[in-house]
Length: 131
Image (cartoon, rainbow, N blue to C red; front, side):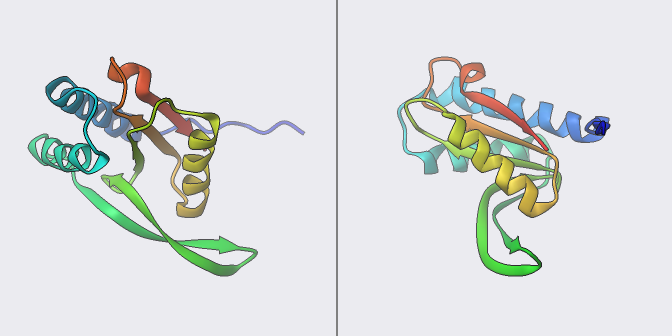
């Protein structure tokens, strides 16, 4: 059986692209080395400046076999369609990518990013995750 992959809609891709641009601006101005909350606040300011709607600390229900097993808070949901997990860690590991994949499954969204600000160049700290 072959599973047909459904592409991410262009409007969702555009939101993702704009989110990456915001993270690059934040990183270019602040650089690495600050606590995560500083990057969160700067991202909020940059998203607002760019006219992107967002929800911070968005609560989602975590389902398991039709039951609610808990509630989790997502760092950022941009325009209701893109999840962003903010990090300040030595390096992004596979477990961080899988973390966002789990968030996508629980939320029903398809596109997410791990954005680690503890890097020399933001491009190296951004990992795309697609469901």
